[in-house]
Length: 478
Ligand code: NAD
Image 1 (tube, rainbow, N blue to C red):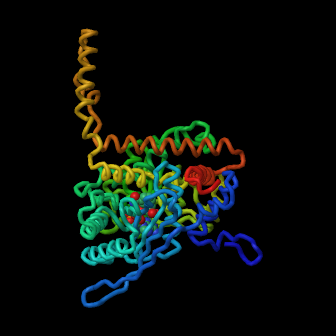
Image 2: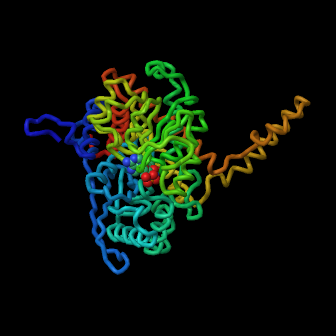
């Protein structure tokens, strides 16, 4: 990381160097012994594989990875990415982020990540299925997957379909394993997935922003009003995370004024209908020509437009020292992993931009993955045991109130009063509670430590303290 004179040059940092840089910046505020810090930071296991796959009459060698960053809690957990940018450094960085993320939101897993170097857009579904199944068999062979070992999930370029192929391959190779469905999360609901997982990361981003914007003194410092209502938002990436974030943040009254995709951006000061743009893009395979806004060919320049909240939700390293000076957003919410380089962060913090770090704000996905894993291990849907009981109990209570007061509760209120919690109600409630509590931990830590001036350093320090405590309870470090 340092040059030959021992000086740190932020421009030369790789993605995993950046994660280590943030760790090192936070470590002095944690009061942990150096040996323990070294252990927390170290990457525990790296599995690089190459395997052949048939493409029509040809055979291609596929490069793929699974990295388990930390075994302080088992299983390890992290998504699988399909992209031509995948390399060992990227997967190591993403696995480390998973360790800090899980600890921060009290999800009892170590961090991991997987990646396959392919373009999912230019690969047929048949070949994608072959690659996914072969990758899963490689993980099984090396004992790198399993409900108590390592549990993958979706990430960039993957979704429910790939998770269904993974679970099917795993169950074929490990027949009769009673908890086998818990070997992967983000599965379709029909394959023992959980309601609310698909949109969980985006919903978590919105719950977090709602909490962030609820503090009057913080908002005043940024020159903003309290609450999400009326906030002008720009989103980069209209995939799983970006689409659901945009759709849900509109329900809170925010106005999405621009959406940047890989083939251009759409801008409309009055607000873009995110649902309509998403449908349009699926149909036309491009955002170009969308009638609800102006097309901007230079997609990345849309991040520099005037707005209150900028939400990068595509890939890492989108905001660098080159464009950071021109970014005008007051708040940047890192829905993607690592979208801001350390050099860019320095520039933004100097300008007073509030950066809500990835290890906190995109943790909604792994939180609901944890709920899915619990559901799979307990073999029962959340809400199944208590829903009717709760409804009967609430009905009796309303009846009692009516008998005692001689007045009847309006019919329009009864349904919402007696509604017992379904799986989706419980998932969203658990997700909201998690995101609110984690933000309070980070904000309080920052307030308590006068020299901690940014949320990322506070988030890393809170996370390192939690991992340190789990090592202490294991008795490995005195
Ligand atoms: P996705 O594949 O569903 O969507 C990514 C979108 O970004 C695609 O629509 C793609 O076209 C677009 N994109 C790619 N390059 C772009 C560019 N240069 N400019 C604008 N748009 C571009 O992926 P996703 O699951 O939404 O993941 C996005 C980010 O969120 C990644 O960093 C991922 O690690 C992170 N993340 C995802 C989850 C999850 O649950 N899926 C959870 C936590 C973090």
